[in-house]
Image (cartoon, rainbow, N blue to C red; front, side):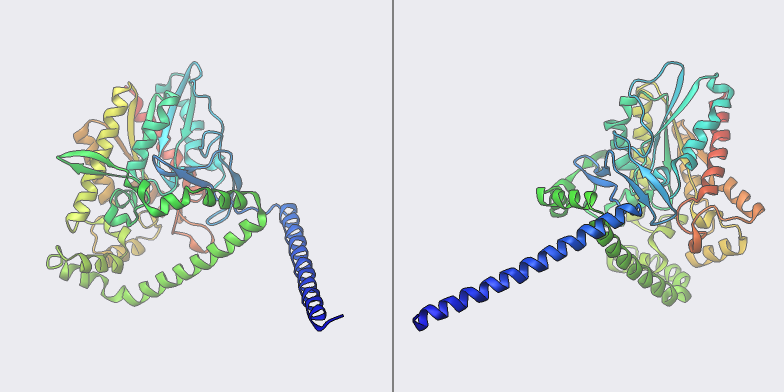
Length: 430
């Protein structure tokens, strides 16, 4: 055998050995993933992504998705066949039924608690006893989706709600973020639709469809990745790990910023409010100091906030007009934020000093005033929830170590549902 032949033989021998080693590694990896997948399914582990892209609203709940939600609170979540966090409902309204369509964001979606504990189920169960309902069956259909502002809720009304022929449309307003959600400058994302004023009228800005981020999420490759994540518990575990690290780092940065900025929050904002009105860079820095959502408890500081309120109020009126044109009744309910219903008055007062606010119910009263001018009912829950929390020394928001922060807990949903039932029944009475 020639030296060349020996060299070729050795070369192919090495390649063959490498191929065998790689094959063994690949088989071992696949076997390990299979064992991990089986183990995670046996123990009932899930970390699903409940959302998918939507050409109208940016995103929506994914029909048929189910699994455990443990980011805040804990519940087993099932999304029905029409993409609602609710049981199945027939589109044709059953006879002798009073049907309520609920529009809202994460408070209505209520992933943090079991569906049977959500305020809309409490409302559904208790409203049957209301004399104004006249003994009819009551059906509340939940169209809430986390992160939605009034713009996406109006689009939901137009695209989904009317299929169910409701007698009453209820808009649940989370004052903590709904107003900022309606402003591109305040929400700081280009991945959802907005309404803007053009020639004095509301106009839909759906340019998010052309954004690179939305097109990427809608691409076949991204959809394949979503399918793998939805189908594989191992992929969900990796996603949860990524989420936990990201959330931990964000929380650490927020706490560090809050600690560093706390002493000068009120002084800086109050001293510079007028001088910085037209300075965009300084304005964003000021918002970040105090916390953007906390500015909701104050009169609008600048044109951006004034425009956010103007758009929000116009969207609510637009919704009122469309509901009335369909022969249904329109009701707005303002919910509560954690600090509004903190059981300790001293904590609420300290927050107001830090935020430069004088009335924690400012946004609720402003929307209530809009209803008085616009001829529709506004039910404000926060004042009564505050009284309940203070008298009973309980937190209605938050879970575990985060009591007082975040969404309603089970008791918060129960109390809110009971207060809402009574207030709505009163408003329905002749």
